[in-house]
Structures are given as structure tokens and as C-alpha cells.
Length: 309
Ligand code: ASP
Image 1 (cartoon, rainbow, N blue to C red):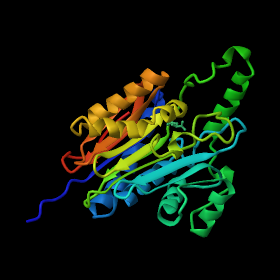
Image 2 (image 1 turned 60 degrees about the horizontal axis):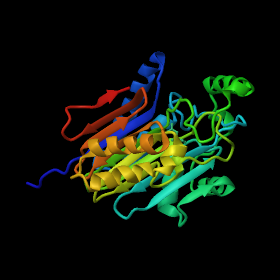
Image 3 (image 1 turned 90 degrees about the vertical axis):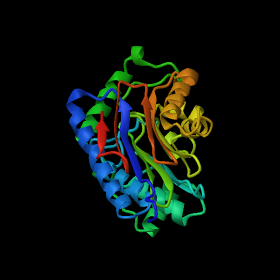
Image 4 (image 1 turned 60 degrees about the vertical axis):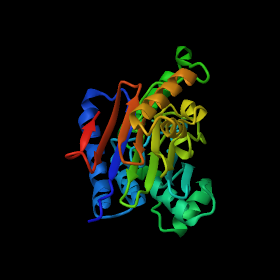
């Protein structure tokens, strides 16, 4: 009989100081996402489909800062970053600061599969979405009361001179960006992520979640990684690819790779964040230097889903 190849799926819902009264919603949210993706993998579906499904569940859940429920930028608007990469041919698709897209991860996947460009932004991204049946929506469909209140509070804090931050300093939380890494029965590794970015970000700002190497990386020969946290720091240490490079030279240890990538972020940028990692055999590594990180995983060798916040 042919040996069964391992399946594996790990998801996260952001790394920050998750308030106690939001922990249950985070745990439920990452478990729902895991379930949706795992059903795909168990039925023999592709890691690409599993990652998209998991992330769509979290984009549609207003608990998370992605899709519906995203943070507002400094102008009170929603601009979304997302990306997805597959580890066989290293194809990827991404969107940067897009508006009016309900599920940016689905648009990123459509770009991966159907566009010669890798990253789309602005009107071109919206046009491509419409041409390829990706749902567009009004900004109101993505905005929640929680984020309007947060935005108002940040505007009044910003008016006080004492609250001005040093340039390049890591901002305070919250996070709630979402991400997933999957290994399917064909040995394909896929990583994806989606975010509204940091609350109050400058309009037009593009973060690590739109950038292959920083927010995501996937290479079937080594594994997949997905970062979250302070994007400006993550970009400078190319965090997801750094995790993969560490794993390529440490005997495929995903836990050590995750810890190494977070240590690099801290050491070189004083940044805070987290990373989820899978190796090519489906073993999971997770690390973060924030007070909390919502995450869940399941593999062929776990008894069931494992979640923590
Ligand atoms: N890394 C994301 C960004 O900077 C935010 C996050 O992960 O919470 O856009």
C-alpha cells in the first residue's frame, strides 16, 4: 500500500496584546478558519484552496483586521494588503492598499493564477477583480463600529503633541492580521496572508503582507512561513524568507526557524511580531515576542486541532 503523505495546516489571527474579553472570539475564529482549510486538505484538495478558504473565513469574521472589520487608515478609509505564494514554482500574487474588495486573498490568488504581474494596486486591482468575478463592495461593507471608535480615539490622541512617536519606532498594537500555511497531499506548500494594516496608517502605505519574502514565503524544498506584527520592521529583515533560510540550514527545524526570525526582528529593528512556519514534512513552528498571538494548527499526526491565543 502506498504510504499516505502528511497533511498540515497552521493559521494565525495576529500577534498583539489581545484583550481578555476578545480571546474567545479569537480562539473561535482561528478554529473556524482551520476547520475550513482542513476540510479541503482532507478531501484531497490543494494547499492553494485550503489557504484561501481559511483566510476567507477570517476576512469575513470581524474579529480580525482583514476584510470585514479591518482597521481604518489615517484618513478613515480601509486599504487592504494580501498575498499568496506556492512553493512548487514560486508563483505568487498580491494586492497592495486595495479598496472595495471583500476578500483580498481571493484577488491575490486570481492574480497568482491569471496575471503576469505579481502585485496589483489601485484601480488596476479593482478592474482585474471585476473582470475575474472577485467580489467588490462599498467601503461601508467592510467598516465596523469598533474600528470607527478606535479611529476616533486615535485621532484625538494624535492631536496631543506628547503622543508623537519617534520615526521608525514600532507602534503600539493591535494586530489581528490573518495568515495560513498549508501542506497538501502532493507535497505542495502554500502561504497566504491578509490585513487592514496598522490602525491609522498613512494612506497609501503598503506593508509586509503584500510583499513576498517579508509577509510570506513558500518553497516546497524547505517549507512555508507567514509573518505578522510591525510591518516596517518585518520588511527590513525580510522576515518570512529569513525563517525559511534559517530552516534550510538548521536541519528543517520549524520551531527554531520561527524563534530565529522573531529574534532577528527584535535584534535588528526592535520590532514585535510573530511567525508561523511549516517544514516540508508538515511539522509546525510558531514564535512571537508579543504578549499573545491567536493561532491554531492541525496535522496528520495531531489528534485534532490545537489552538491558543
Ligand atoms: N504586518 C501587518 C502590517 O504591518 C500588521 C500585522 O501583522 O498586524 O501591515
